[in-house]
Amino acid sequence: MASEAFEEIAETFEFLDDWEDRYRHVIDMGKAMPPLEEAFRVPATKVNGCASQVWLLPEIDGSGPDAIFRFRGESDAMIVRGLVAILHALYDGLPVSDVLGVDAAAELGRLGLNDHLSAQRSNGLRAMIQRVRDLASQASATG
Image: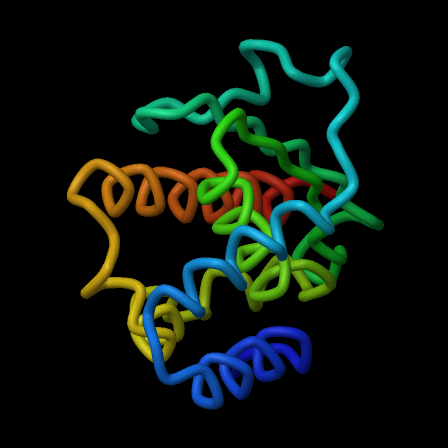
């Protein structure tokens, strides 16, 4: 159920043998992501449970379960910014009803992230995933 953008990431990770190369690729993805304007880095968009500062700004197109889930994100840590970029590839552009059906743990497991992130980063990633799911659930219920 992964998006084409996420499949491209998975294929790239298969090609990169060394975890350090994968780590660099995640950081590069974060660097390539457009920055989130300072005005949107506010408590309402901040993700709690992350050691680094992370902000996710939902941009829902439409209303109800068929609305399209879009978001932008930012972090003050480059690796976390890369994780935001991976989540963006995984979720952005899906109908909000489909966001809840994504098995993020399984999809991210394909990248081997579970084995190479610190406990703090893993907890932060889970917090970001939960925030995405909460935002999609709220958007699906409105309309």
